[in-house]
Image 1 (cartoon, one colour):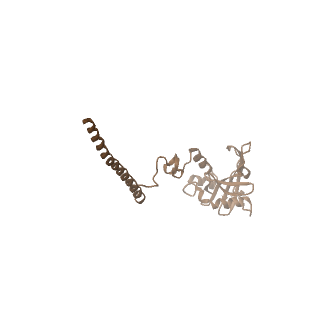
Image 2: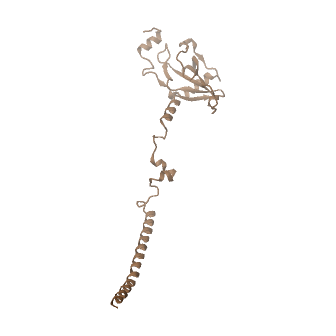
Image 3: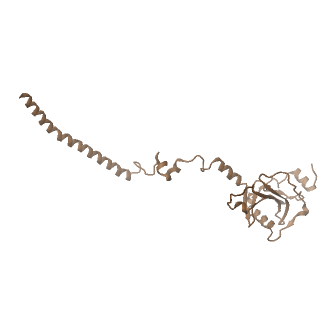
Length: 234
C-alpha cells in the first residue's frame, strides 16, 4: 500500500513537469527561428554581413561567371606557345592586299639609311612579304608547304622614287644565298601611277612610324660617310 502511494505521487509529479519542459523547448526553437530570420533580413540590408558578390570556394564549379575572379595561369590566359606564335606573327604586318597577294612589311628590318653620295638625304630600306591569298582562305587540305615571296626595295622619299634590289621565292625557311643587286644611283625609277611599286611606296610611308633609324647621326658615321660618298673602302 505504501509503494502504491509513492508510485501515484511520482506519476502525478511527472505529468506536472512534462508540459513545462515541452513548452520551454518549443519556445527555444521559436527563438532560434526568429534569430535566423532577423540575420537574413540584416544580411540583405547590411553589405558587411553578407555579400552575394563574394567569391566562394565552390563558385568555380557552380557559377562560371565568377571563374575570372580566381585568375589564370598567365596574364592574358594565353599559353607560352600562343604568345610565341603571336610574337612571330607580329614581325610582318599587312599594308595592302589584292586578289592575288597579301603584302606585309617586315618591321624588324625596315629602317632609314642615308642615300649614298648625299650629305643628309634619307631613304627607306624595306623587305615586303607577298603571301598568296589562297593560303589564307582557311583551307587545310594542302599537302605541300605553302610558299611566299620576299621583295627588297629602297624608297627615296625626297624624289618619290623606288629601287628594286631582289625577289626570292620562299618555301619553308628562307635561305641566305640570294643574288641581290647592289645599290646603283642610276637604277632609281619614278613611280608609275597605279603600279604595285607605287602602292607599296605609299603603304610603307603610311606606316613610317614603324621604320626605325639605322644610327643616330643621319644614319651614318664618319667612316660610312667617306665610304658611301667617295666609294672608297676603308
